[in-house]
Length: 255
Image (cartoon, rainbow, N blue to C red):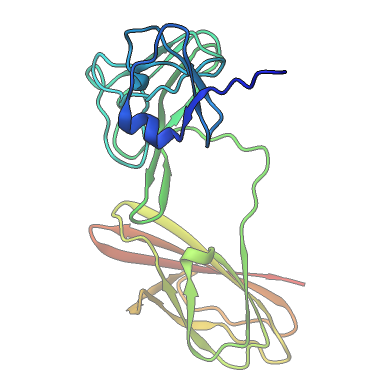
């Protein structure tokens, strides 16, 4: 007659709660996880490792002198005087992330493993301004073209959406109100209004900056007239100097 052999068994929670010491070679089965531990006659259950499995390991929080997990969530983490260093690993080589300059952008320089601040590049997240204080080389570039149908009275031209506006169906002279123009001193901003003229031509007769009326210094000394059935490009250069505005205007006609 065959003999029935049963292992010592219980749920994982009960094993943990009782925390018995198994005899040397005695197995203990968790009935809900099917994991097994073998006793050695001296170590309590909770300190034994599971047989044939991978022991769990709680990754410590990284700090000075401790290699561990680092959570990046916008909070500052300072390790070893502001430098987090790593050697070896899957990527090979070694690298470091250094404390950077506020609002600067980081880049990965060629032939190195260091992430450094990109000299001449900065980002102002409050005003949504990207600044390049260095020579810029572009292979291609494009600008956003805003479109407006008709124009009369005060027409808002939001600089945050682009600096070029295409008008069709203009039926009267109008005031162009340029909004969200940066107010930083010592800056020059160029905006352009393109108008497809009908039998009677109309141009912006006045401009505002953020709702405040401005004086236009026109090329040639006087305000130009539009050209019927043509396409007129009206360009304004807006200078911000000593907390005041200087505006120049010019007209180019095509067609």
